[in-house]
Length: 408
Image (cartoon, rainbow, N blue to C red; front, side, top):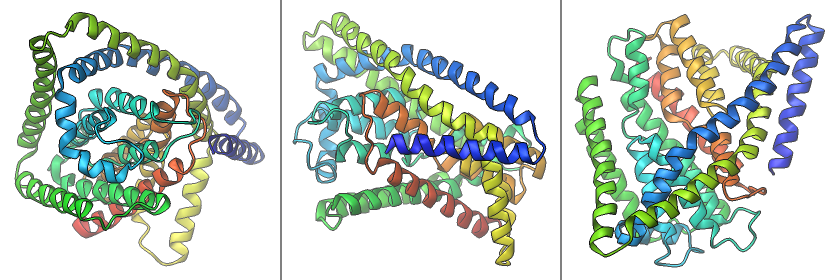
């Protein structure tokens, strides 16, 4: 799968470069070459930047496992996850690391979510009979990770505030609805392909509980100002994070674990894993960089606008689409496009708000796939990319629908 995707990206970029040359745009050659070297440098910078945080969380997770805290947390979600990941035996440590990652994503703790996700993928890989091929459980986890609901996307609010938005947090509900739709679509398409029983009473019970929890949180948080939302998010996220760190260390120490030695052993694994990521990141970022530099995405947007206008539909959403289409490929690229849309059309314009919702409700699927699967040496992703892109598409459609509903 990844071999074909990589080839397709390069073919698409090649055709787009030829089209630009024929159209009298010779600078595309220099842009493409610059992109190659820029992406090569970026891949190393990202991997090296992960060394410290990966070493930190791998060490802490080792203590958490020794202390029994991770196992205790996993018992909360294991009844649900065991039905969604039937190949993972009950009581396996993967349930704890998956729970930790999904919780970090839900709270918007990006610095913790990625290393915890890599730890979860590593634990799932220990059950993989064919190490180069993704298992059903790994695919489900990756799709849930790329489409995970984020309760309070504070960074998006901050960008809107910096651009002078009258009410920076007024995109809170559309983002939450869009990312919820993305998660639901990702889960359902994986369940369909893997033939999971979504009518199981335990699954339905957990879903009902999660919906009730989200409903209650929406009702409570939607009345808060941006400052209050930011404060609640900061206190809750950082407080839970520190509570986990102290519980890992103190409980492990109470149980007689050699906490320093165990932390060092876990940190060593994090260091090794960060270095292993470089070639996988490089491969994906090269292809994405060429797509951007070649103008292929611009051609796609022009085609979408033409089709929408030909059907006599409201084309306002097309102005924000660069952010939505870029997000699965590059978080920084999507952020730049969001800011450009806000600057050009106005931060409180329909396009400006929709770009913010795209930024807060979709994920960098190709990046996550390269990092998570690359960390354990998986080369055959099977249906992971398809399911992740379905979730992204659902999130984009839900974002557009929510913005038309809220902002007309």
